Length: 610
Image 1 (cartoon, rainbow, N blue to C red):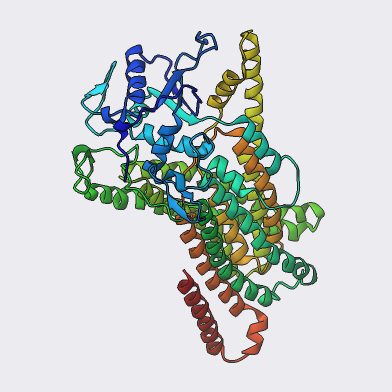
Image 2 (image 1 turned 90 degrees about the vertical axis):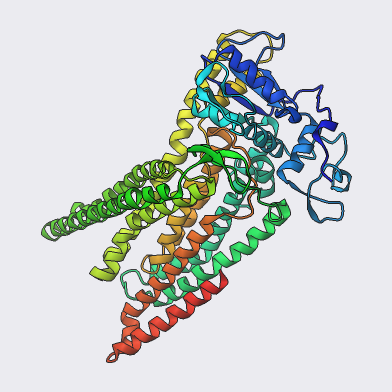
């Protein structure tokens, strides 16, 4: 039975800051007072029933430049009640996994009234985030002090503050001691070992842990391809047609690994309790806007936007724009082939070491252009998806991922398909694949980790100098930590990380039969990626809020789709090979029928497993 909030006093004598709220510098006092009151108010009065304090010295004095920073925490009792509200799943004394309820709290493993570590810090911060985001207006018509910031009953206060620029950001604090321990076992020493996924999950939550789990699994799955690829590459270097055996192994590999991953993922999420976690009713996303109306399902007041208008925006604006970008990508590809021809003509005329080196220049330039186009298109896709005004965050993400994947697939792989099935040039295919793969990996490592790390290190030095110059007598550690963390970049989620792995999976599964070292470079990249991603999570970005999840979401479908395309591509490459054609010297019809039959059998098996 669910307990009534009014029956509890959630006062806590010892305040533990968990979340930081930063307001704009010119925020009015009446707005600050109203917001803190709403956060502290009891649930029955429409508040969040949390604890909030301004950032101050130990003697109670304010710090210059930090008047608009507030720390949010909660009592242990309040967090337990919040754990029931969000539906956290915890392990029971009988080793089963069940949704936590306060009334049956003593049946859960490691629970004690004085054991404040029963909930992890990331779970506590997730509960506070949930309560802040669900802090809703009651009778207010506007944000006090800001007549233009309109409110209506049921409107999320935090979302309105963010959209009007009153609330700059709110983020969870790092636990310095726990982070130090995690860094030590995770990446402080270079060693070949399994990642501490349980510790990552406890600190960053299930979404981040699942990404690193998938990265680790995918890296190990690439090892057989790499081990077979090295001797295959060495002994068949100049014979570009002897790829049938490797392509056949590629077929089985790309089909099996995703099915095995689903089982590994289910085991992990069951152990963490998120596999059984009930999905809550999705609230409208922060950017959703429309005329105030009544939701026919919940009966609550919320913005209402016509689905017909949304469909018109998608089909009359977004779809033509995506098609235009795809045409532009193909146009750039044709320019690349013109550059390849010029480089080849130059090499045939001169036959020098320099001219031989020039053969790789068009591919390198094209790889750089691809990365630039992908990043520019990403911003355009985000703008269009936001403009389409999807009500749910899941719908917004699905449309964004679809736009990005379609463009990235064509932009990265169209030239390889053209070389393989139009030009029939396996030597150029090997050269292009190698150049695109290696160049993209180098650029991604620099853009995602090395450059941000250098910027963050410079910024931290400035912060430390400024804090030391203030000559404060009290302990600077908390103030220094908050001032450093609020200036850190915000981690925008695992989208870019999964996208990079998706493209890498495409390079390896589609055409690595003509360049067997593709898996080797992918393994080396993923090993460094593990360390660089760990570094950016712990050193470069603010700590993200944990997000419970049962799987890798729509990315599972994306990888499965790529696997199906890989089956078709490798069957076609096998059918084109001189080795297979020698078996059917006269009857090409029999060859085509056999290739199509094999492709259909493997594709059918793949679809059945999904």
